[in-house]
Structure formats: C-alpha cells, structure tokens
Image (cartoon, rainbow, N blue to C red; front, side):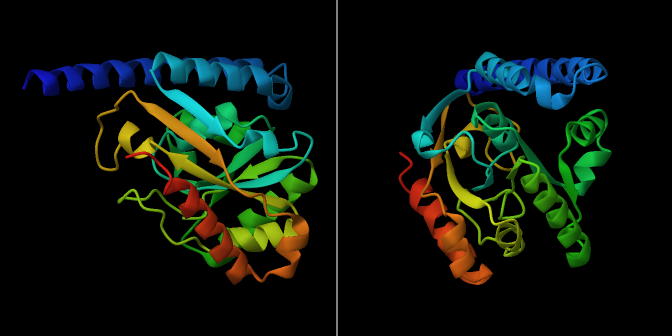
Length: 242
C-alpha cells in the first residue's frame, strides 16, 4: 500500500513538472518564433526538451548513432510505444526533422497550434487519398533537406509488441529516394504503459538499426521493404533487457 501510494505521488509530480514545463516551452517557442524561424532555434529547442526529460528522471541511452551521417536527410521509422516517443526522438536525434502526426492532435488546445506552427504534418488516417497527400508533403520536406519522422505502425502498440507496419510510409521513402533509418525504442513500455497514467522514472533506449540506403529502397518493392524494416525493428526491440 505504501509503495503504491509513493508511485502515485511520484507520477503526479512527474505529470505536473512535465505539463507545466512543456506548456511554458510551447508558449516561449511560439513567442520567439515571431522573430526567429523555428529552424534557427532547433538546437536550443532540442536542448530544452532534453532538460525537461531529465527533470522527469527519464534517462536516455543511445546506440548506433555513429552510423548516422549528420549531413544526410533520412526517413526515421521507429516502433511506437508511448506518448513520450516523439519527444525523446526529437530531443536526441541530431537532425532538423519534422514528424507526421495524427490529424486530431492538431485540434488540441495549445499543442495543436504549436505543432502546426512547428511544421509537423497532419495525416488523416480515415482516408487513403488524404493520407497520400500527407506523404507527398513529406516528400517535399525531404527534398528541402528536412528529415521526416514517421511511425509506420500508425498508432501506439497496446501490447508492447511491434505491430505490423503499414505500407504507405515506404511508398514515401521510395518516392523521396531517401535512406530509411529503422529505430528500436526500448524501455518506453515501462516508462508509461498503454492504458495507464502512472509514469515510472526509468532508462529508455534509442537503438539505430541497419540504415537502408536509397539503392536498396529502389530495388525492393514497398511490401518487401516494409517487411524488411519491420523485422529489423523487431530485432532491436527483442534485445531489450527484461
């Protein structure tokens, strides 16, 4: 009973720190964006997010980052486990990148306005035609030197297992002729399990998999490419320590 009460107290503290800090972050970012483009503030914004995560006792371990070319433009494809995934990835991937995000997030108070100004791409998953439109916008981003983060599962896993990937993001990669970076996210299920509001301070890992170069992407059809990337992400997440 004492242990559970302590967990509740910690969780309330972490949510309070996280929400207040992130709201202030969004407000000040929007204010400064009136004078300085988001692109020029990118390093500072990522640093602030890292500090917020540290205040929430979220420790991040990185593996395989040395394989990344910091001058390249990539399509990053991680598994999707928790609400923290995109924040941790944005904070720690050393690239100017934007994400493809579910359209209804753009209607949320403050956060929706922020991500629209920030440059994330809304995707309407109820319509294949509208989803394709979002992917073509992502192609334009990649052509402009902006890396793209997309969760190919389409939604968070409820079981902790990597769900089957959707093929549309791989049509994006083929169209853009940009390298794919499979990413395995580990520990996020312990941090914030699906269906729970209890945040548990823990260490999470970002594991960079075998980068799929444009030549390989061109040789494979979208179905095979999807399967290949899915298996690579599973390989990385299966090495997670239980």
